[in-house]
Image 1 (cartoon, one colour):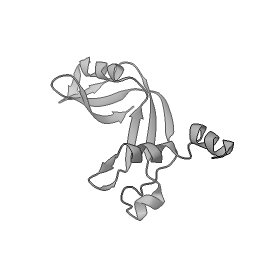
Image 2: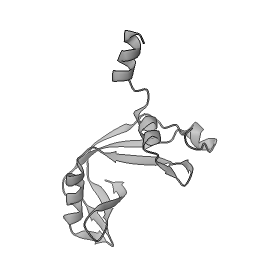
Image 3: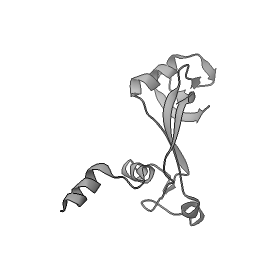
Amino acid sequence: KTSADMFEKEHLVANLCTQVMIDRGLNDDGSCKWSNTFIKAPLKAVTNVCKTPALKGNLHRSTTPFDLIYCKQTMENAAKKAKPPHCEYEKGEFKAHKIIEIGCDKKGNPIHFHKFL
């Protein structure tokens, strides 16, 4: 491998959303998942959201903001109804300081990302 190959492997990512979605196996029952939101925070910080009063059912809203990366499928990929591992996503959209709503189980653990505000 050349030095340029090593540099590319270590520092360049053409599309982080596509790579992470594939690496983590995130899909909807064998189809490419339309979108996914990644929370840039430790699990403990997100789990603390489950300690806030419930909005309705098991949904809780954060009292402090989080930084997020929002990934969505390319329109071309969606149009051809691609299946994993051929899913392609747009470059992640950074969302700074967003309030989040998540679903929590009875033990106070986050189990579903509902939305960001």
